[in-house]
Amino acid sequence: MKKKTIWAIATIMGLSFLALLFLQIRYISEMVSMKKEQFDESVNRSLNQVSRNLELNETLRFLEQDVSTANRKRIASDTVVTSALDPDLPHAKGYSSFETKMEEVKPSQVPKVLIVRNDKSTLSQTSKSMQEIVRNRYVYQKALLDRVVMNILYSASEKPLEERVNFRLLDQDLKVELENNGVRIPYHFTVSTQEGREVYRCPDYDEEGEEYTYEQVLYRNDPVNKTGIVRIHFPQMNKYIFSSIRFMLPAIAFTVILLITFIFTIVVVFRQKRYSEIKNDFINNMTHELKTPISSISLAAQMLNDDSLPKTEGMMKHIAGAIQEESKRLRFLVEKVLQMSMFDKQDAISKKREVDINEMLESVAHSFTLRVEHTGGKIQTEIGAVDSAIFVDETHFTNVVFNLIDNAIKYRKPDKPVNLLLSTWNEGDNVCLSVKDDGIGIKKENLKKIFEKFYRVHTGNVHDVKGFGLGLAYVKNIVDLHKGDIKVESEYGKGTKFTISLPFIKN
Image (cartoon, rainbow, N blue to C red; front, side, top):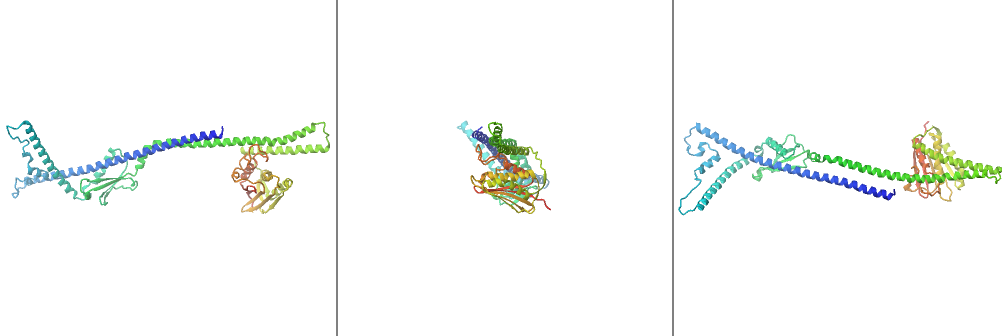
């Protein structure tokens, strides 16, 4: 499948998942907003009803007190004879203020229907006259009742707020009204005057959740300076609101999991596609690399079988040498592949022993002397490590240095000599080894990938530099197995320096 097709599918699926996630979050946000509005409406409705109940209860209480006082006076008047009072006066008989007003005007003695006999009057006029009399009587009595009630209320409003409100009953009323409106969570409230003076605070008051406070005026029909304010807040309001959307959280979680899984799948697909390209490139390179020694050995075998060619001693030596060199080369290539296969299976057998890194470096440098001089360059060694004993697998670690020097020679500047500098030195508890060349160098974007298996800076069927892309991956694996560290410094067009650091053996 082409990359464009994969990218198109990934984009469509990714946008679909994001749109689904956005819609779910939007739906949850709207549900929270709706629940908050419902909650606000329920609380405000409850507070409004509590305020009305408070005023109603106070009115009833004062009326009951007034009637109770009148009854006590009436009982007292029956047992105590007072000549100073006119027995015909209502207040002398122990009437309530309400009854006193009624006795003064004696509405019961006012005729309900006043019929004036007039021969000329008609039934219609009589009906109108009766309606007018009833209406006037109703208006008068209503005004009388309003005056009595207003006198009672204004006398009540003169009392301090803390004496007018029964806070225990207010708490109970709040609880009942909130439950009637579907609000069944803990609350805290305070009562204060219009000037802000707090007259009551519930015993278990907690400031948590004060940012969402609801207010209601108490005794709204009293003078402004006589009214009070009840403030209420809910510490668990957020939990109460979000409890209604709890069922949506698993849906969002599964959507996020699917999105992450999809992204991971796309990453794996691209990685596998990249590995497939690397594998194809590796097969092409391996085929090209193996063809050369096989062709040389095949040609030497044909020469030996050709009876027309004279079999001189010099020719036989030349053919035998060519077969031997090409066989070594072929074995070396196969061993590289087998080594990496062995590391993939984690079957590397490490036979460690004490090795002098200075001597090993001198030995490897000596084996490359002719090859470097053949390019017109030279190889130099700077042995500066005093503590040079390391505990390593000699074969594998020798191959590490061999690969680094081999790469330096292969990646030299075209048609120019290569100069190598091999150095050792001590750094803290470690001994360091470096291989520095003046070759073509490595671009910055490739530095992080050079230790990956099968990776080569050049790709495709360009075979100007031979190899499988396994050398540096092998080097990295060996250094890691020996608890060491490898760094690379390179400037494109000027050269590269590899530095290996390993702990040395003390004493």
